[in-house]
Length: 247
Ligand SMILES: N[C@@H](CCC(=O)N[C@@H](CS)C(=O)NCC(=O)O)C(=O)O
Image (cartoon, rainbow, N blue to C red):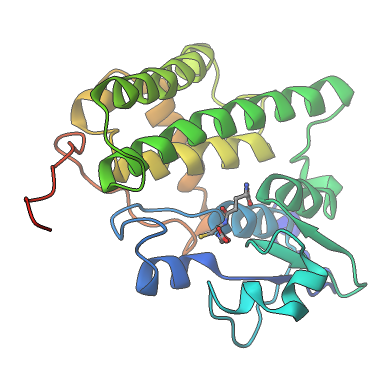
């Protein structure tokens, strides 16, 4: 097992560091208390497979990603973005994570056969759907979307429906697919943790015990040391605060 983690591939990718830019400067993207952005699960996938990734020496989010040089490489102008030493480029975090996992096939992150690989994708797609609801919740609360109580409740219901499905699946399993950690465990744990800064508070956490245990098991793997932030506490789900008149 140790040898697997120690493996080093002579590979230099470039992945923009979203966390620093989004949290330090661009709080319009995510409030500072949201513990996770997409870079973590790509970093964790790389760490698990022993893949070394590099980072650009300088990158200013909301500026550099709209420059011609960036758009020529990544036409959707978003990060994370991947550029391999061999010139291979990718954007969208799920395929970047999948590709990274595929660079170290012996780590088994994509499952051990075609069926497991499909199941890995199944849970990745579901958690992406859930994460869309998490983002929508954040947007109605921070005023990016006009606040509506019924929309807010619809988003929360959609999010909890997904979390409940995953929680139920985990009631009798340690990991989502097979007996070992796969890419989807990293992905699900990361995006569950992301909701911890918004509406997955004490009450919600108590109703999702298997998902919580799973997330803690995943993020505390020694190989992920230094990648995931500490689990934040949140007493109550964030509520909408109407802006004061005249502001
Ligand atoms: N579906 C994309 C979402 C990526 C994303 O939304 N990135 C944001 C990070 S703040 C971004 O680059 N936004 C720039 C923009 O919206 O122009 C993924 O999974 O990678």
